[in-house]
Image (tube, rainbow over all chains, first blue to last red; front, side, top):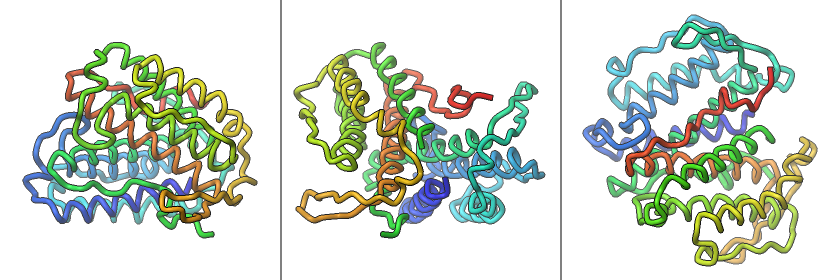
Length: 159
Length: 159
């Protein structure tokens, strides 16, 4: 489980570095599909990861500011760093005995939905990779090489 | 490991169903980013999964036709089904004792590169999710709702 989180965290850092090479106008320009904007996509993956792991699984009181309150690259990076600090210990401490523990999600419609921790963790993993794929298309649209998304050869596994 | 493969296989089936509602012209139209075309993207994720698991890890003689030989939706679906049949048993039989086994990849430059099985498997998982994210952007570009990529609530985990 941890390896795929580490992969996402590395790719996210690479996207933040990529953003440094792009104008704020491009980061906030309306685009087709997904969340519809580059920087809000990065904000969104942070908020979703933090929401599920700290709010959902751990049941903590969480503070997710609306995007307009963190609407610059530096602020989204700071938001990501703050969330990461709070959620990473849970991911590092994960062990398979947690797989079948149940959390209760309250949906937007007020329904109580049970989910296994293992499902939530994999949802968070797939969610960020999916959005990263979307960013790669928008990157080419603005004429820039996207972040290399290959997991293999990233040094996540020592030999 | 199996859950994320099952997720990808389900999403791929959903993309194949989605393709049924789109003209062949759209499926083969040049687009920006990624592999650059919808149907070749689906062909590519099948070929990569099959290549790494059957060719790479299992060291079998594998037959990957060039895209032009399977350049219709039905042919890519058939190619996917054939590869799935051959590679799925390995994924179903996976256990964590295989994590650190080593396979040797021969790169395009003829170099021998060792990879742990665990790295290869996660690479294959992330690879397909990434490309699925790209497909979702192209889907909106042609005015169609993309496949729902949420892992949570897909019935992969019984409660």
